[in-house]
Image (cartoon, rainbow, N blue to C red; front, side, top):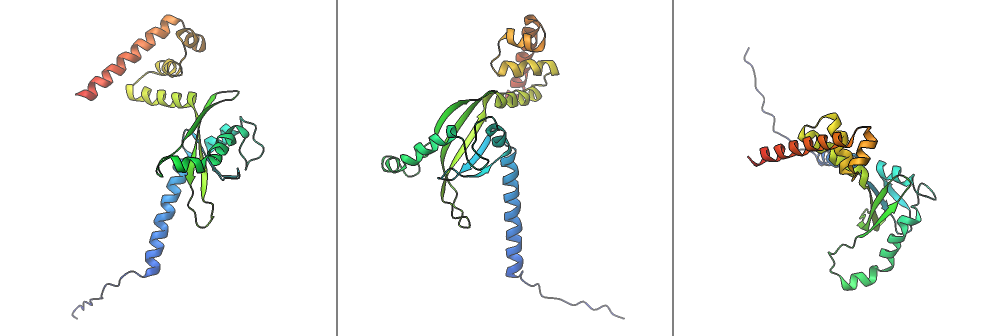
Length: 211
């Protein structure tokens, strides 16, 4: 018995299928963006013009715990003051500056455990569903933690030993030889020896990259 081959015309995907694929792609991108924001080494907060927090990532939540925060949905006065300044001067700024110019206010905040570098600027939420409009974008960076992250990345890149990494992290944070020696219970000469090895490995790494 002969085998019959039936040619079936290829149907174009339905509009519903196209919309489903589009939604899946959008949802995946949104999930990736949220995951990236949550893993930032600095705090990120989005605040409405009435001081209500729309979103804060994990790092921001940790930093806010060190401040006097009236509630989980409101920001402390230290962060709200620069937002008010932007709000009060927005009309004057729009007249003097180009439309694509971004004003960023910066300040240093001292907490019990660290110094936080703060940046505040306008953020266009542009969310029709929420109808929020312009908000404030606040970033909070713990300089000591950021330097520690950089130092650990450099340690991996240069192939430092565990003890060299300990010394390099403290040096990156601005500690003196005496402070490093006291923190790690070693002599200052040992600190100098480890740092000499670190600089040597750093030069070797730079030399290899130039080849």
